Image (cartoon, rainbow, N blue to C red; front, side, top):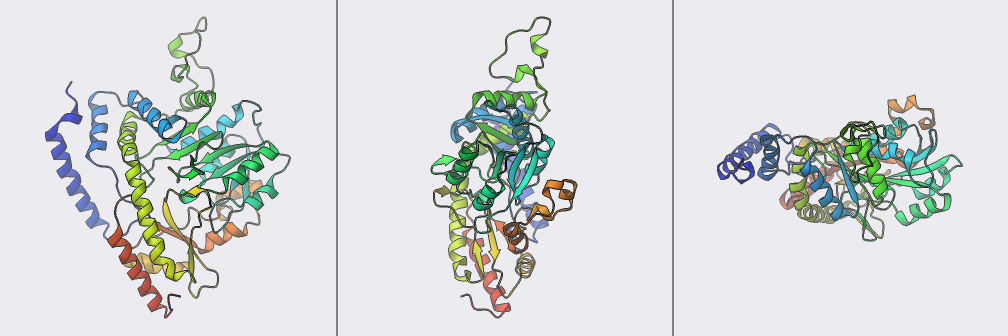
Length: 425
């Protein structure tokens, strides 16, 4: 069958269609000339998806394995793809029951920062562990090392590190705590694809790393996620947990078991969080573009930070740890507590003039109604997370050239300060 990927007429037609669709969508969403995120996929990704459908290869197959191999080669480990970053967190949490050299037991405590996406908390709970909130440093937005050390108890068996907004905490200090107390570590890298600590990619610093390929993330497969580990045995556990505990998903086949069809042998429990070939095809194309995406993100972040430096008396930008290479997910901004305006005043202004904003993730998760269901998460003193909750917001950092738009943001912020009758410095 001729490949749809090589059809010039189809490519031309899709180019015209996507261009028109982009124009129409832009006119419909004209509220924001500077949105949080924008579509980064095009004809090549769509053709990969069509190729899978036209060849009746839609569920996890060769493209998935190739994408896993390419991803693992680029980011330094063995990769296992799943259908979302949330599913990746779920698999990583359940796999902690089976870590070599001392499995975690049901009820063991896992320390996790209070500012994160709730998936990280729910996965730990669903896997039977007990999450304990740790405060965050409002300057870096990542886990507070001093509070982390204070929260370690005899029940603590693991730390779930979240590399928030493309940033990372001081991983040398985290590793020291893990070694001192014999703790396992898993990493949520869903907002930090490409971030490094002393030149080493995040996700390879602990037992496992999880990534998200949601629409707004560093690369997209629409929905989709990945686990990465440097432990081949653990990667096999991920493959079992990903698909029913089914042995046929293993890279290293097991020996035949008498009385069982080798095509239908189940050797563990598991979920069904398999990706599709459509997602993997998207991922292959996007992965080839990731270096270019990241360069644009860095350039845009650098320019924004430079232009906003004159307002440092009123707000601050996320601080990067020495030794870290930030893969900018967005631009988080913290309003100083003594500023003569509130976070809501500046975000409402920006929204009205066409700049989309969001709180920093979900703020302090301890302030959300859902945590009232879980006793260990209630009534905690988390001043850093509270500050992020009240004073923080972010705007987008895009993987394309946005210099003109960034200068326009500077112009609008200058108008805000003029409206507030405030000098820049």
